[in-house]
Image (tube, rainbow over all chains, first blue to last red; front, side, top):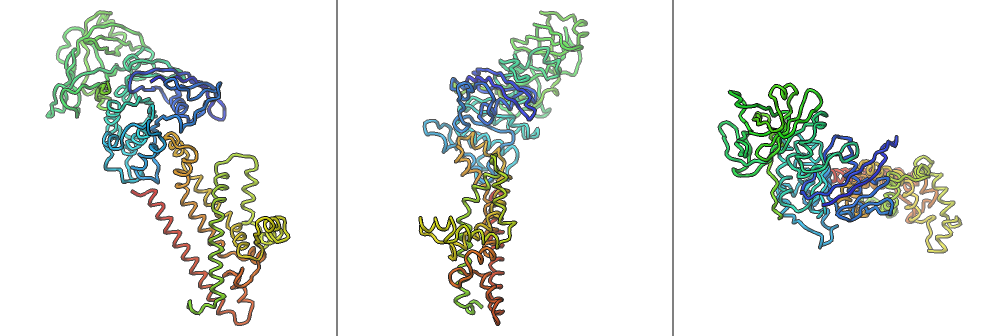
Length: 372
Length: 232
């Protein structure tokens, strides 16, 4: 998928200028548009979908021009074939769930159709809801139906604008596995807009970081989220996504053991089968460093690594980037600690991570390439 | 009691129903269009259109009837044109009564429909367009069904108004038994003749029953629609 966006839009009665300049090509199945509120995420997706008309600029998707103010092209939303999952669902209240799902189907030419009702209903687990009306559904159910409805219109890409933002933590945890299913079993590229780092690190392959209407960083999830000292300085939750396999479950103690080349990780119990590859996010501020034997401490997770970079953040924090058996890891420690431990590039250290620090919401299935 | 009705009374009831039904059905498409324009349109002269629609509500009905007579009478500019071109005569016919009723009920119908349009969440229509629906499809599959409660309310209000129409009707089409005499004008006639009290009472009872039936029917319909919209 290749999306080029270069637009200008004045917003609000004051006409405050807002320029958006974004261009990204993504091979990944989920590209996250990540940034604080007000960074231009919603303006960007609404412009792509054709719901908002930029004042100037151009938008193209896979070489097809959707909008070009200079050439006078403005493809209407209904002809763009871009699926859109809104934050608040927007199901049609007067139609049953089944008719909501099938709404977009009749507008799609037969050769362009993909995805069967049965298949998508099974994927999203909404079979029992088909005869019901949207008013009777829970927030999580509504969002799953909204995803199914967008998919069944056979879009070229699927835009998801903060689809979980209106849900509480438990509902979020219910839906995330369905979005993983979507990522792994549907062939539609997804642009996932979010300001929640846990969702982005759990789902995305590629991350586009938007700041003040500009692309501040673009790349694989670890390169962007794990990033820079500035990021830590700004208080955003820097962290790294690490892949590991499920080794065993310890039901009695509520712990799942994950196998990683640099050492075992124990995390709160995960409901996935043994052997399943998972990804989990380790926040820089949850990682402590020790040189030599840390002695008797309560922390169970000890990963052996080598220091590859030390970056000054805003005082007192320093980002220490490690290599743990080939994977990156970042520890946020104080400048004093770096001096006391005499950390240098090449130092051998042990990274210590508390099991309780892992956020179960950010731990999910690793994306698998089932489509080849 | 029903077999006690005279043929003229039966005719008045039949005419009343026919005039009111025709007035409602014929004015509905225009009412929907005007309501949509007023609720969504941003054009110069919007206030003027809004004012014109509401005129019959604030003018004395006799004035409306007289204006209709001036315009649609056989010598009036529109009336003459209609008669010469299409052979349609409105003055002193039941069709003229329907026109008078439609105009008197029009503001009520437009208001109810317009209110229902204003409560529709425009984001639902945007969602439909991302699913591939063009403007016409969005209107017929999303906007119109969501307007249904307002359309029903508007139809009932206009129907009730038409059944009770007196001033404009009697001025424009007169009070000719079997031709333009409706329930209200028949009651009026009864009250003008000695010994007409019984007939007036009979028709009053009929009018009451019809008004009640309309209210109950509209209530049941509205409940059914809202259940469909909000229920499971």
